[in-house]
Length: 144
Image (cartoon, rainbow, N blue to C red; front, side, top):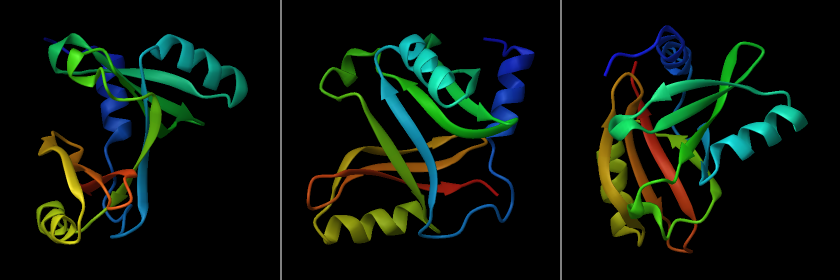
């Protein structure tokens, strides 16, 4: 599937810059939503965000929220049946120096891995966890 010029621009703008992150700091926030159009209208009206599309595997669209020309958040569509039990919510992602090593430590400390660790090209390696208290958190080792 060919990417549109707008989608390529959105992906490039969403790509982390070298030294733009440091271990242990919040890096990205993502709204998991079943109705991206409703969410886009709400945040455009109330915050002033604009949105750039980024095609995902399977034909869905990930929306990059932009403010003053910079990416500030993402909207993830909960369209697939695998997300039927996922509530609409914001997910925060911490930057970590090595996702795989940190996940191993987290599991020993009582966290649960929600899904297998995965890579997003030009973005980074990502883990979705439930910490021992049950809160969801994403960990990401961004690409350099």
